[in-house]
Length: 311
Image: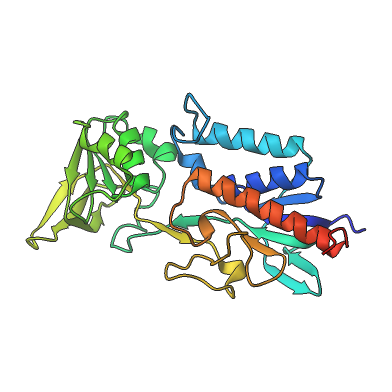
């Protein structure tokens, strides 16, 4: 058999992809995880405190490193590459990069999602010069400085809490009248005196010449505009699924791939798991569950292909 032929190829090395790699490799499948350099959201978690059985809390990077080591210990292979295309002829998937071709019986898309941008003046121009989408990555650069956090979900509230350990001048701006984060997460913001809460407000512009200097905001109730001085602006307003390679698959209104409860797509042998998948709740624990289910489904499909399952 060809060296580059695998039972299962997994695109993405976040919690869903690594969970699938562990389960598939442990089931004696030949597994390849292809990483393209895009960071998993889990790497941005300061303290992972709500993963069942994982106590005391650990950092996202430590958790991910442990997951990868566990998958490797069971025999999973890893490769850094950018896949340009996925095709299926008969029962075989062919994945191509600029220089290599990989083949597999099954493919799991676990490429996750990327940060949604506001699309306002100054956002792109000042990215990396005060505008950031990762508090864990860039927060230390703004120690004791003026920090603006934009958003009202779990990510925004979690990151604002972390940033408040670095500066006592943190303002979180949300367009609604209350946070949409889980209650425990939102309560940490509401009871944190180091974080100023600004509701019913949108950011219209990020100002600065060489670096961020201020944000222009509009009160949605009164229409009044004003400026808030800032050194760093951290944006957490949702995610966009990375589904370019499988754009033909059915999606929900948010662009997330629709699967059944076995993580199967309409294409036999092609699975989706994690934050790229349409579902009501996106957490590390649900991503790892998705990955485990996808690996189990793929294993049963492969055994069926090999005639090892008798109906």
